[in-house]
Image (tube, rainbow, N blue to C red; front, side, top):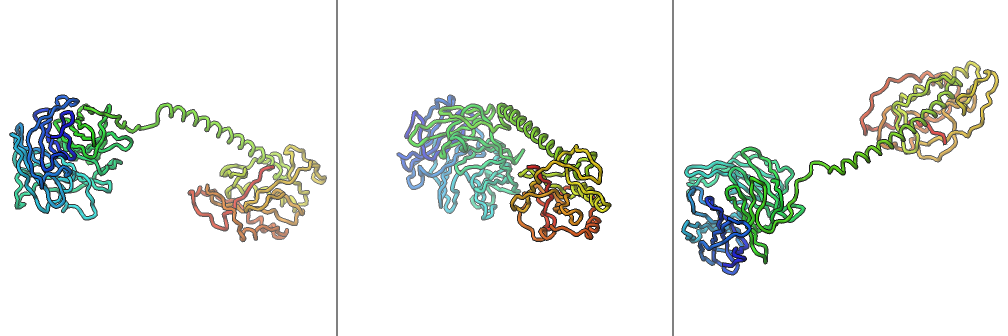
Length: 515
């Protein structure tokens, strides 16, 4: 036997438990002894310093292979100490089986022609139950052996598409060669809740009573990570938390369950083999060569990040509030000035409502239909005054300028005309307020139609020929008819984000700001 510090080294090995002693059976074929199956009894009284002694062997060069995967398990009907151990070697086209007696006699292997179990990971998988689209990856059983009759449990099959199925399973130790009694019967499949877990192709499984365990490589380190599933309680695959370090994961590890311990045999290529054990009661690993294990995923950010985030968030909120109040005050002052001017020098006219105003990036505002009501009132009042013979007065730069006699002109300081924002992307040009009549009573102010839909989508600035045709001056005979069209519109409910705007109503009304 090839040994390393007393522990044999095998490329493909399997373990079987001694349920009455802290020991396991290590079975394998050494590369230096081709065709010889070796059985070793390993005492794990001290997992950091296990001891090994030869237990039995069998030589059959054509059948036993060092590189073929193997599985070891105690006979289902054997519940006495030093029970019979069965060994299965898997391969393409032929599967070999043997047994090891309590006296250390290893029987010659029996071949099962045309029985292809590619790996112990799928041992017991009845492929006739699976559709051709399913590609199995790993299976784990949760069976309760009985001395006689059938044993019942579950079989969990994971596929390479990241899914799993749970089957009710019935096993029998009275299976016959002519298949009148099946070894394992699977039925009533159900889905496994993978819980976001993705198993690798190197994962291995082990059964411990009603719970199945899966060992795999952690994604962030080379440490071994454990998952568990208990189908009799839940069909959810869960990560097993552990405290302290964990052994490195190798695809060639051999695993078995020893009472409440999960025993792992590792043989690093070119290194010294060693054992580790995981206590499912305390959640800790024992043995040599433990490395940092992946910790549990935090449920939230650390306290430092929370405090920093709160402080940073308060600063941002305070800044936004300051800018909003300042901008709102500016708009109120400008809206107040425009209101007094538009009211035909009535300094007590109410300020326009800013409800529904939507800010845009250039400093202007977009007003829904309701924003036209106030403007229409004062346009109607102005035109009525013009028709009555009053002198029409332009907007005043000083909202508190006193009113002179109606028949005398007002002396208003000169102010450059207001710059308009062209919603169609044209050049910025000097303009006049929408209520300023440049030709006395011979023209009607140009008013941009407002969209009845307040959308948060970016405003489209392409030219609209239909809208351009609407921008013209109406003769005085048509003004009266035009004023009859202005009426109060009921307040419409806010539209959902992303509602399309029709071509006839997509042009918003812009209230420009002073340069």
